[in-house]
Image (cartoon, helix red, strand yellow):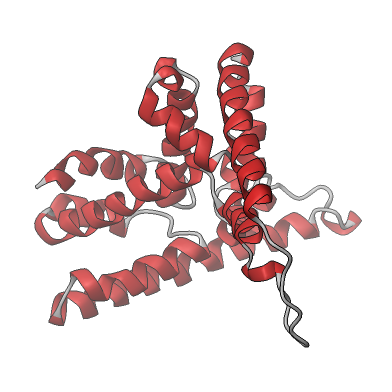
Length: 244
């Protein structure tokens, strides 16, 4: 099966010492996609066609800008800008005065407004990352069903962020059946509860260290508790900040 090629990144993600293996996978996937976009791939016709149409969200535009390949980004954005300029010009030419209908907004259904919605919600990097990440999730369940060693690795991880825990729990119903499904859901629920309690306790101790009464007490495992807590709540952000 073609999903076989995605099992290695999944295994690598679960071997990382982090608060969410899926965030680690997504971070690596995002980094690789950014590098791919700024490689000579931007000269390929199919890639250029997609970036012309989709562009980039503000977060990934900032990532691309800070990577240091000014020429590559400029060439890609010049092409994207020209394509969008032409599209908007055509939409403006084709637009007609909306008929008056009391109580109804005309702009929300116009082709120009639809193009605005497209630009607002499309990003070449986001869509490419999401497409491959969904294959990682399928590969995860493939490994879970057939690899006892992998199941042990999962059992010993530090749980997941809120988003990926819920995603994993819900998707398990599509990939597992009967006792295996029940056992899996019980396992990840216990794993999540145990590790959330660990991070909550670390975060509480982090706050207490600002109290003069605890000033001379050891930090224990709380020095990076704030960043790890943000990761549990807000997915990848804190994981990136702690890698600097």
